[in-house]
Amino acid sequence: MYEGLSSPNIHTPSNLSEYASTILHYPSSTLWAGGTFIMTRPEAYPSRTMNAEIIYLGNIEELHRFQRNDRSAEFGAMVTLDGILSTGKAVLPRVLIDNIQTIGSRLITRRATVGGTISTKDFTTSFPGTLITLDASAEVRFIRKRRLHSRWMPITRLLDKAGRIAIPQQGMISRVRIAFTDKNCQYFDEVGSFMLDPENSVAAAFTATLDQDILINPKIAFTYPTHGVCYSRDIDSIFSSLRFPLDDAEFSTLEQMIFTFVESSFQDISPLQRTRTSGIIRKIVDDLNEKALTISPESR
Image (cartoon, rainbow, N blue to C red):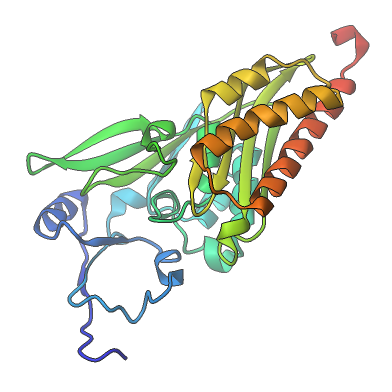
């Protein structure tokens, strides 16, 4: 134990009103949900910080709610990833399920929460990128004029210029809304270990509808854990302009265009990350080529 170490002060609000009062009194508090990310950080415990303030969100009933209708599902920030699998696996997009199953074993997904997986600091999980490709929105709670306000925002609007999720100061994510989709092309891949080797890992999520030989509403996001999420509507537009199947020359042009955006956002991705990104792009295009080639001649 460190000399003079004192235990953190734990605050346990039971509703959002109590949370607002607590965060106003302790604006530098750490929000604690499942704790799976916080406790994996170097020197997370014992802490060198004296009299640290922690707000535990587990007692706020509103954050545990799950609602769904014919078009979408809403998950409170304290719903666990395992809870998503058990309540919505039959109706939620395949790309989201694949992403959750990649994050870790049930030991992890039973504790990791929706809000915590999005709001990690100094590190980006693969989850926000997948939500972006699904046009997901988040309800953000924030303090203004000493009152708690809320606003629904697309996940894309939470990305700052550096590609990281940016929550307003003294703010939190309270709910996430995911629309059901019938897109016939959904792809998720993570290469490397985000937790053990984040400097060389990469994940990508891709969704689109392939109609004969063109893509409708394609969305692709690349995540580099120590950098952030690379997402651009320009890349989506490039995919929309293509006709599948692509030949090698067309693939090389596409790959070069994508890397122009990636490297303009993150200039210091590692050589291994670059190679792995190239491999993921190749897998996505190969899958689209195969789907395009299997379309019956009558539907062309």
